[in-house]
Length: 244
Image (tube, rainbow, N blue to C red):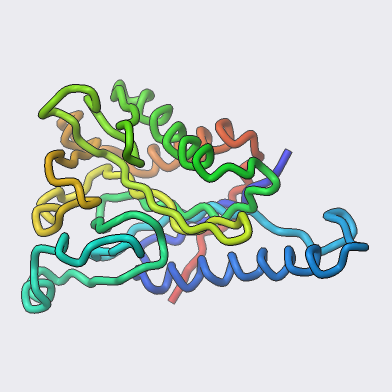
């Protein structure tokens, strides 16, 4: 059984968390490079890749994926400043999304060669974690054909709404970036973008669906447990990581 090291980064700026992900990914890629360049080494003898799962919350920020369209950002720089929202072009997949307070952002840095070398299956597994966790709260969630992420009423015209957005990067089967789950999120910030480039569907949150403020630590605990179940991994909880 693989072990996944879990860290809660707390409230951290988007670019700081991005840099930390890159550092962890680089360490695994360097380890794998030694396997590729030294055929006499195997995974037992050679340096080990490590799996990580990071949780965090970001100050208000819009992020645009590498395949995204800038026109899906509906405000100019002056309005961004007025809203106190940052903006970043990223190297993940997907289009534009919002991160902010009340949202749990998860960044798995996994070596998929130790799990399954199928990026589509990996994305479905991430969705499955969310679907199972939401079921604990009586929220029936699922998938929308042709789209990533987790949706409610995906098959009902005019009612489909996204509760969790996803976008990842994968290099030599090492992943980064991940998911953003709306827990107690202020959904008004989605009004200034075309979320994920989808014009005819809305977004929602656990708070909106249940009509009450949700205990975010409880949600995190359930996500960690379901992540371990879905990926068949031992979740190793580490001390909260403070990034500057």
